[in-house]
Length: 403
Image (cartoon, rainbow, N blue to C red; front, side, top):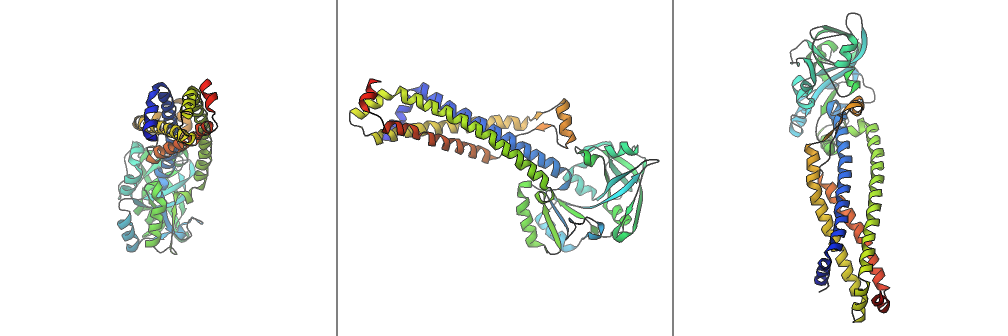
């Protein structure tokens, strides 16, 4: 009976109901948009920093991360490949990474030499799409791809000769001479200014590392990295290999996201505070408008507890309708910005690129954002709905009827 009365009372004053629902609608919409943009920035940041080169997971020989030398290289074997093929088919690539002194005719510069499996590397990091000159590598090439910044420093163009010298496996001398087959431009200035790609076979020959690599990089959903690591730890001998997620390899990125997230939570807390005051204002308005009605109901014998419960049901019902409409209304807005992300230009774009990020503001479509924000604001409204209960329990029928 009380539920039926509450539902009828909601639509007896449509203006008041629409105002309350509107408060909930825009609150949920703004909260979802704020969190979606913030999480979208984090997703893009992680994908840019981790997905362009590092990988979400890396497998090394035990002790390599603490002392990154070729002497701690990883021996490739059938057992390792079987585990990777069974659990992560087409999601990994082998690499040899070492620092060398690169030179052209009259200029030298320290650089990172990376021996790669051209097909796997391109499938996972899309290097070919970053080419600004020349062509991509094939496994049998005696050629190199170099970063645009490094090419400018060494004054090299496509078909010029690049020479480098360094130290190979167990201290052997390593030197190579390669034709520049292509020039690539990375979003990260650090990669752009020092990276040299050559085929894995060539790197193994020059560095004296037959069937050895320093890193196996795994590219997957960064949110599943911990789960995949646990699975690999079960399948591989953890006393022989070290398996690291992007969080372990880049703790500074994790700290930066955590710090920024704390600021975002503070901003959305301010939004919740504003929502609370606005919603409380609508409740005060509702109580003021209906004092006479409440007084009459109490005077003719309705118990205050039942009246308070009926009003509480009205309030949380209107809040629920507003929250549901807010979640539904936010969906096309988020979908629009997902397919039409905001692209920055000018100085803002240059700033993003200098930090290695694509100058674009994307949103996250994680359904938990919609659910969490809807629940939080509904709980907030439910707590504030206690105010009319307290007012009604203290109400005096004669004073209320005179209002």
